[in-house]
Amino acid sequence: MGKVLDITSRLKVQNSLENTKKEVGAEITDITEARQEILSRDRRDVKRTILTEFIGAFVVLPEKGLLKASMYDISDSGMAFDLELAEGGFTTGDEVAMRVYLNHSTYFPFTIRVTNSRAIEDEGVVRHGASFVKGTMNDVALHHFVKFIENVSASLKTDSGDVLVSHIS
Image (cartoon, rainbow, N blue to C red; front, side, top):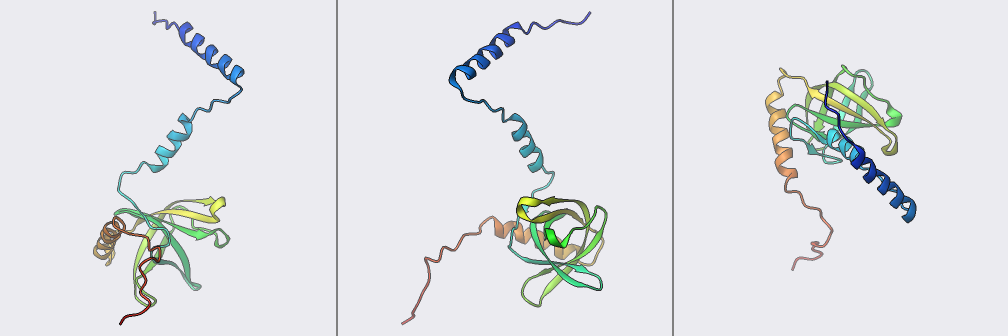
């Protein structure tokens, strides 16, 4: 026969809490579920770097041209990027050619495989998670690019415009 747990002391505490809530008139919110959702969303096997609006990135649409993508984060194994909600999105398994522009005319290409996508209505975007397709000629460049982004983003500063020079004598 199994063990029997006596929960009467727990019930007394719960009833006491409910009575206190009724007396005070305040609602008690359990944040455990919300906290777990945040932790599971942020739990990753690899280090990632948040990149919102940091570097110009585009997806290559055959016979259509380039579509602006906002890189959201990046790691050694893949990246996340956003497309405007009105542009639509890719489906899981799609292989997509991308370009990262270092200036207006210089870029390096690479290929990704979409692993997930979801519409984020309040931001007006479709966020895509993707893994880098390995075995391409840009594997080494991509690895160094990711390391560069990780190192640079760790020491980024925000320019508040307080260090402007208007005239040099």
